[in-house]
Length: 299
Image 1: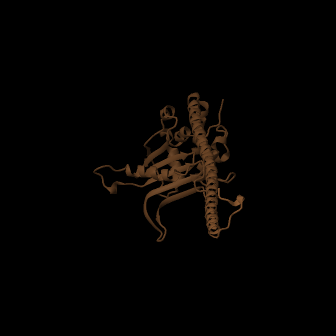
Image 2: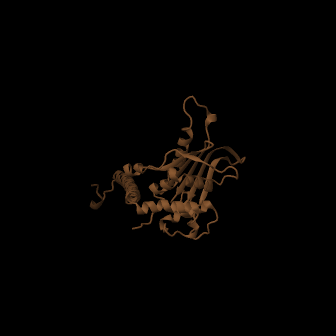
Image 3: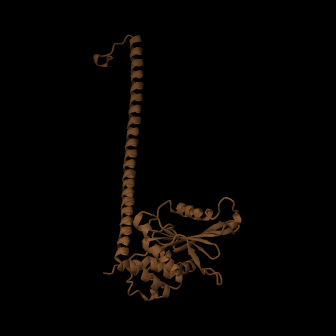
């Protein structure tokens, strides 16, 4: 039985871009996304952490990316992120910095450093106010329009920003379509825009997860890990919202209690003033020898 496979599930994603047998796909993907000038295309890469099914079987909650270096020494990191959270931008910078500073060790010098390029595919929206699906970042001085260095480059591909029904015009757009709509594709009969050499190869990888019982069980295991994680995260979000609602209710009650206390203090203050005034009037009447009616006598 054939199943539909989602290429954004980490084990499939890494099999597509991080398997030595599919190294040409990684090269094609990098050139498609980075769009280097003619004559500067990436010709070859060495995958530093190649696909290994054991990492998915033994560690269901692992975070998996693809790391590679090209023939010029440039380092690449490609990662799929299904959950967009408030700290994601910080994590993107942190992982980039880890790759960059890992290039040199004690005794080396800074001239040995090569550019490090991170590409993040997000199955969510990090920059909601921006319509572009591809955002690139570098070290840039806004005032003088200066780029400090080409050693830092971060590319964010927001899959939900790709408009459904859009005509594919570039290889980058073909890859975006592949990862966004791949779970809905029939790998045996893909649409015309998925019948290029590279996309047929991607379909073959996905087909392998569908037809192989071992690979499909691993895929299902990863899906279960994702669903479990999402359930926990959503439960935490729900609990946090409930806590915030309870906190607001407590704040309202505290304000009411505070207002009641203030009103009570005001009443006590008025009573004290009234008692003082009444006592003064009694003393005045006593001095004048005027007796008070019984109902006006002091308690």
